Length: 638
Ligand code: PRX
Image (cartoon, rainbow, N blue to C red):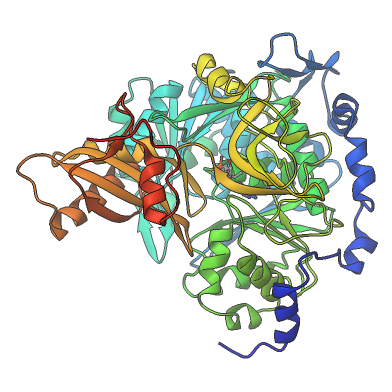
């Protein structure tokens, strides 16, 4: 690693000055200049969000901003009708038809840019193709796709005609894909022939074809020729070619009148129990809150080139690669590939080439790239960057400082945004003019009311840990869990008294009112920023013939945040050999997909359990970390 010319500054940053005041140039140029005043503007949440909603086109204006009569089934912008795609694409055709909407790039260096006018054509043709396949308002369309312009067009086409999209991250396995398609009862699956990753092409159609065999609801599978030339065609007789479909389709399509509360999409996420939860987001509130928060937190303006590195299959991709940037009429980069392939400067080369101004990624990516040293970013021209951001897990101060120094060159503020699949939009985050403390997401955004509470629903004073709750509804909140309103109520609203939303995270507030997120309170792990339930992994383990019982915990890891450690009881006749360990790791990966990377497996004869037979993972974890196990009066080893 090269010697760093700013070493003295860094040492000071790391050890003494923990508050980073806003950069003077940022203060001079951003739209919002006074953090406190902006926070106060959000005190009356209904007035605040109604004011924000006026920035969009509504076919019919709402009559009531927030309806709480059927809490926790809140409704926003009641009686309002709009169309999200109309607002994200069509609305810009009079003002900026030739502005680049999406710039796709991949690890092989291929590029494709589409303007708002071109995107409108592609979306409309896709929408008409969906209609021709019999898709109507309210029908569910599953997607298993790489990040690409066609994937965005398919999402927007659904929103245009009122179909409900359900993306499944292309790293999930056949089983996970099939489970999600079945739960959503999807009529159509859109997939691709493959995706690029580290110089290889990964077959998606094969996984999709296998999954569809177990999904009777799917009437048609559409395939996008992504890694192959569309002209070469494909050999699978049971699928329809996306390019053929849209070639014949009309490029005009009227937007469907969507009620503000009509469902926009379902996105599955892991919870404490085995079955993934289908998080339901609706139209009007999601539109208003995602666009508002992106605009304020990253100070988006007409000249920005915005890059959120998340895959489209996660909420971050939905909200901040697709909907919010397009609603704001900006340019959004869609990237397909690994961050260190072909070289560890892959991301910085794109920043340099496309003059990215605002860059948003996960702490795990930063920690991974730190390993290769700062000479990689130093060789690139990163001077276009103005604001940086992170999401997905707490960022450790070392990674924060590295990002600040080597990517932001000591003058780009870092927006540490805390939010969830369920919240739809950023909830706790600084604004560019906020004084920053590395590792803290700072304060709830205007219009968001958060607090730390104990299990009795009492306020926890500053300095002490407790449950992070949201006290008032917000427009882009999940509305329910698909087909499971009871689980929605139980998981989020009935954990503690007081009718507050329980996020599942543990947090602490400091004396300045800054929030410090400490991780999950439930049995959900965060592996490289991806959310995965312990019980999902455990059931994958026990589906192997050698395994009788399994318990998994997250173990801190310097790069991935957490890695999975598994404690396994074998069936009689099996031995915990290195071969079996490898076979189990492979098996779990096959069951759940590549995100389920297992770190260690230990074989054991017993597991700590409660008298009712529930595995006490916290005991395993405490033992692993060598910390006090706490109250174990109900513990038995069996
Ligand atoms: O534990 C929190 C963590 O990620 C969880 C939500 O995961 P998911 O629904 O997959 O959405 C991730 C992208 C929005 C939260 O409950 N988390 C997210 N952002 C942060 C965070 N933890 C600390 N700091 C953050 N900025």
